[in-house]
Image (cartoon, rainbow, N blue to C red; front, side, top):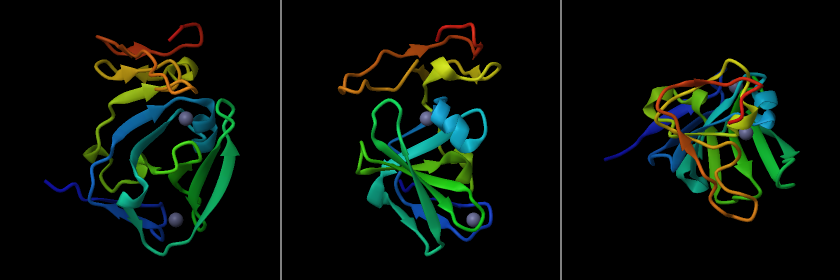
Length: 162
Ligand SMILES: [Zn+2]
Ligand SMILES: [Zn+2]
């Protein structure tokens, strides 16, 4: 079974393609992702870095130092239209995130976890049946964190403790 996935930026100058299924697809509610997107959260599919092939559309990048790990997260965006197409990580050099909203068919990938739900914006729904992590999936020293699977959707609010 092949998993041809294609996508690109808003203006279409940057295009990518992969024949592999993502390692995982997740929604991140961290404050970095909120600010980076200017929105409520960032949805991303993680791939082995060399599994995604880009055309020659020009991208610029911005390296942000993560508050938590003090490692760089590099935002890759179309130089022409500014769409964030991809992230790369100093902490996970073999991985690349592709913005879910950049896939031609975002529903071709399935979200299986939500992370950093402790900072989810008020009114953001956390679905049932997916792994929800209050913080990252792993602690900075590499220990797996405990997740919660809700049996009904939950509405984030600033007074809740996820
Ligand atoms: Zn563009
Ligand atoms: Zn994030």
